[in-house]
Structures are given as structure tokens and as C-alpha cells.
Image (cartoon, rainbow, N blue to C red; front, side, top):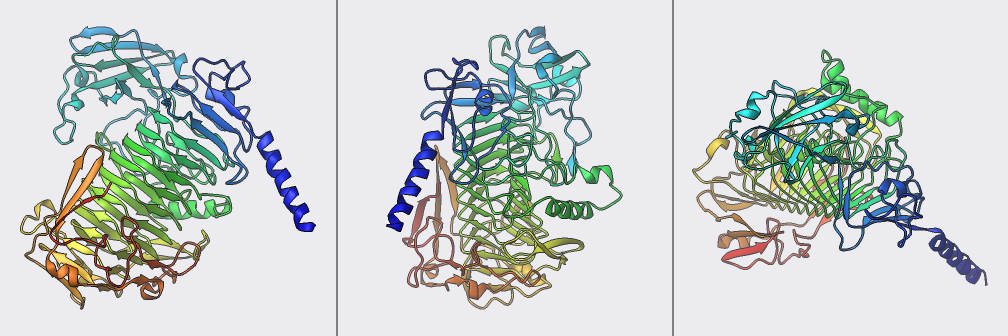
Length: 632
């Protein structure tokens, strides 16, 4: 009887939750005086924001919405969220821009428009310039605003002369696009923009200008458990997002917990697409304000302030970012300082990040995280960025698994001043520079690596490490170098064609100089890649070329290679927590985020590894001869 009564009580609670949860509809044909029902939808998403409570859903129908969504409330748990979603099968755009009309022709190709500043409200992107810690403006000012012609951003110039007489930038991929230029002047009343549209008449094309600093961002922290799903989000005037400042991308979680950001197309941010970052109260560009103190000291202070202000697993992080396409952002596709801890980043395609190269800085990458504690970064496709993935400071308990990297011209993976443990497994790293690690305590398992591997220490920077699976700081240490593990990887060099990367090494040879002991075994080396001098069990041929190549065929990516017969006979050991041991400095074990023992028993595709099929590299069950695999 008691069990039956309990069952009835649970059913009543579930029923009441379903009854009281509401769905609000938004349509460009609606009105904010409506009730938000399917037959009487709101006109703006912001109107639905005012009504939504935990458990509610906001469904947005086809159209373009030019507004800042500032969530007032969050959900209460993973099962009682507030969900913002695009209606199924409908294209919903959220833009940080406004349409600019009334252009006047100055000369062939060059036009001018003057805009009343009332368009911008309390934020004018043509008066605000990009700034912040570790930002390099390359000798000129850059406004957060942007000009777009038919969805493509133009190149800002610092003088009108460079608009009237543009010079192509031959150092970037889009040399022709670099001649589509703009310049602005702004006073208390109006903003004037000059732009070179070449053969296009801006009064007959879609010309937009950034007008808001973000698209989706709660103004205050404590807005948890929100889902953002299915939108096209673009063209916000985002500010530089260093780890020592408030980080505001086009979608920004703002020091909250449990967001799901999924199935979106995110593009054309002046700086960052998605930010999972810290808030302003723990520091705002503190190094820029006091540069006579080393930046590392400032970030250590920020870290301890963050701990004091609630940086822990119960309150911050645990986000899921999945199935998004992110491109044409000039700082990062995704970044986050401390707020990405305990998060899952999976199945995103991040490409064409930092392609215009008009400014530089130490916070640029497809993904750039500080303090990615117990984060999972898996099955992402990251290409044509400056840096692919940059894990900086306090990367501990993190696993980077089954990602595809290529055409990243600085490197695929940069690991900076971390003490481990962290695991890099089953990845495909095909850029000229594959791994740069200024760390200790990493485990590199079953990867395919065709670029250089560069390892070095850092004796002058002391960075934190943590008690396992928490944000609680255990201590600080410099980077001695070493204490890394390399098992079951395939390394392939370029043969005699080393190109610009000749000063670095292919394979694990550079670990001959490591200060701490290293654990390197069961790897395969081809075509100029060399093993660590104390590696015992390895195979390969310095002269053999496995002919590894990648082809993009529409939305598919094909990988081709031909391994030699010795590869198939070289069976490797299964990688487990007991084999990997613990990181020397942090004393953390190589284990799952929940503290359970780890076994790397799946390949890139999720196929099961067994004693009979366990070979080096990210793939099992390979046929002999030339292999063709669809890797995305």
C-alpha cells in the first residue's frame, strides 16, 4: 500500500509539472500585447523572456530578430529548464546588427551613411574600441562594430584613405575580400561610416552594421539551466574576452551553471562566438590596469577571488555545447575562463576563426579555455583556425578525445602551464604543427599525428593545481617539463620536406630533453618522425611514407593512408588508469571525471578495442593497403 501511495504521489507531481509548464510562441507577425499562445504569438523574444519560468519553453518561429535576449530567470535543474528553441524546420535568425540604409555615393565603389546615435541605445560600437588584457591591436584602433555586405564582414581601416584606395592583404586567405573596407567617425549625435563596396550598390543589397554587444546574455549571474537550441546567431559587436575579464560572446552564460547550447549556427562575431566565462566582479582587465605586476600574478589573484565568489561544481559550469557550427569569429569560436569547468564540448564544427588577422593577442583559438577542470572535449571538427584548441592553466581531469584537426596554421593543440592529469586520445592532428606543450602530466594515447611535437618547460611561472575533481586549489608549481605519457600513437613526418617547421621535431624525439621522467612506448614512426631515445617497443620506418592525406568532399571529410605491413602485426597494450598512474605534481590519477577507473577501449569511431584488434592510432579493424575513411 505504501509503495502504491508513493507511486500515486509521484505521478501527481509529474502531472502537475506538465500542467503548469507553459510554451510561449514568438513570431515576427505577432504582437507583444498578445498572450504568447500559438494563435496569438509575441513579436519579440524579449516579451516571452518576461513570462517564462522554470519548466517553460519559448518557441520562436521563422524570421529575423534584432534584439538582445537578456534572460531574467533560469531553470531549477536539468529536468526543469527554461528552453529557447527555434521552431522545428524553421530558420530563425538572432542578429546583433541593424540594417543600414540611405547610403550616398562618394565615388566609384565608395559610399557614405550617417546614422543617428539613437539607433544604438546606450551602447555605440563605433565609439567603443577593442581592448583588454593580452590584446595586441597591432598599432591601431579597432572598433567593436562591423559592416556586413550580404552577410560577409568588411575590413575596418584606420583612415579614410585606405577605404578610398584599399591595398590587398596578401598574408591572409581572403586577399580579395580584404579590399572591401570601411572607416567610421562618431560624435555625440551621429555616426558616419564610409565603405568601399566595389561594384555593389549598398542601397540595393543587404548592408548591416553591428549595433549590440551580444545576442543572448543574462545581465546578472545566477541564471542557470537554460537551453538555447536551433538558432542562427550572428553579427554582434563583441568585446575582447581575456581570462581576467567579464567574457561576453554572442551567446554567453555569465558565471552560471548547466546551460545547453545546441544545434545552432553561430557566425560573424567581432571577437567570440560562445563564452562560458567568468564575471566582472572577480576582475576586469586587471593586468592592463597594473602592468608592472606580471600577468600570471594577476590571474592567480583572480582565481582566488573566483573561489571566494562561488567557483565550485555546485554553482558554476557543467555546461553542454554540442552540434553547433561556429565560424567567422575573430578571437574564438568558444572560450571560457573557469566557467567551462565540468563541461562537455562535443560534435561542433568550428572553422575559419581569426581569418582576417587585423589584430592579434594571446587569447585566440577555435576553442580557448582556462581552468577546464574535468571537461570533456570530444568529436569536434576544428579546421582553418589560427590555433585549434588552446588549454591554458589548470587543465586537470580533462579529456580531449576523437577530435579532427587540420589546416590550423599555428598548431592544432596548445597546452600551456598545466600540471595534469589530462588525456589526449584518439584524435586526428594533421596541421603542420600538431602539439605544442608547455606542461607536465599529459597522456597522449592512440592519436594520429602528422605535425611537429614541441615540448618545453617554464621555470618562471607558478600556476595552480587542484584537489581531484574540484576547483579547490591544492598548490602552485612551475613547469619543469616531462611527466608526459605517449602510448599507441602514430607519428608521420614530411620526409625531407620539413618546410618552415624544420626547427621542431616530428615524433617524440624532443622528449630527450625533458626534466621529469616520461613514459613513452608502443608508438609507430614514419617518414622522418623519430622516437624518444629510451623508447623500447616501437615500429616504423624513417623512410616510409604512409601517404596520409585529407579531402573535403562537400560536407564530408575523407582521410586516406597506407600503412606498411609491420603496422598490422604490431599489437599494443590496452591503456588503463593503473598503467598511466598519477601526475607527479598534482598527484591526480588518470581516471574518469567521477573518480572511477579509466580504460581507453574505444577508437575514433566508437568501435571496441580488443586484444586482437588493438593497434596504434585512432582506428581499429583496418584493412590492408590504401584505407579510405569518412572522418566527418
